Each structure stands twice: as C-alpha cells, then as structure tokens.
Image (cartoon, rainbow, N blue to C red; front, side, top):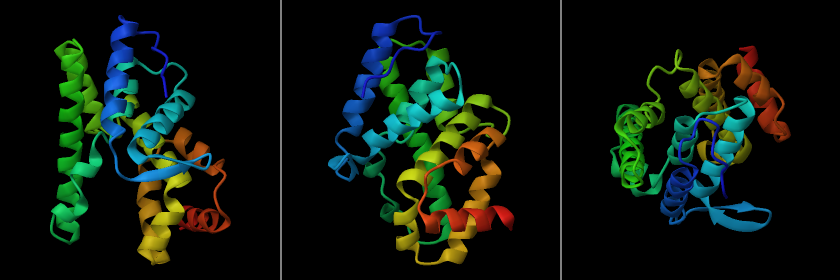
Length: 205
C-alpha cells in the first residue's frame, strides 16, 4: 500500500518512512475486512482507501493532508466505544477524545521521522477536523471519510443499528457536512439497492 510523495514534499524518503510507520501501526488492527476475498486489517485498509479518495477529490493533495489521511484513525481499536459509558453525551466525548488521540499518535510518528513542528501541527489540525467548514484540507478529509464509510461500512452499520429512521437521520447530518464535490462523488457510488434508497430518502428530506 505504497503512496507516492506529493509535489510539495521536500523529502520523499522521509515521507515514505512516515507512511510505512503509520501503516505498521495500523497493521496490528485485530479487526479485518475482505479485500478481493482476502482479510486485511480494517484501519490499514480504510487508511489506504481514504488516501485514494483524497487524491480523487483534490488534484494535487499536499503532504500534510496525505499524512493526516493515512493517520486519521491510527490505532483506533485501542480506544473502543465500550471504554466509555453508554449514551450520546459519552459517545460524543469518545469521538472528541479519539480525534486528539489520533492526532497525538500521528505527531509522535512524524516527530520520530524528523518532521518539523509546523508540519506536525498542521497534520494534527487536519486529523482533529478543526475548522471543518472553512479549511479545504479538512473538508476533503471529511468528504473522503464519508465516501469510504458509504462504500465499506454502510450496510453493516445498518444491520447493526436495526433502525432505518435513525440511519436516515445520521445520513442527513453527514450530508450536511459534505462539500458539493463530496456529495457529487457520493451520488456516483456503487451502493447496494437498499443503501441507495436510504441515502436518497435522507437527501430528499
């Protein structure tokens, strides 16, 4: 799952080492998803898919954005939802804490590979999704995350949730956070018939 160095990269070897270190951390994910019939670590696979979407959504993504995309959920399985009490308030706290955790994990790797603090801070900002509606890189990351979710997790999440009304509400909130470019890409996805119907309903409402 190699990733070509972006145009603004000053040190391609350092970039490659950082990506390899992030991938090595995510390769330890005990959860797997099938890729061409073969089980692959979930977060490792999702990170690679997100980088692919970032490259599609942005003609020339920068180094900070690609590093943030690769590390957006780094070692996520080590902070499970079950480590927090039930309820929406605790769920939202878990999500906020996770963003900080991922940003800190990414920063640790980048500093070890010799990145300076301005670049590290920029990656942390993107991973934490600061200025979601005004920062172009954060918007691209959010679009990519939602597209990967729709493609790889939507049907499984629907079965686990067991409530189409709640799912439509979730999709509606997600749609509001996506840019026009991301929405256009979402409408072109090859989704299951049921997923397409629920997305269409959320958009119409």
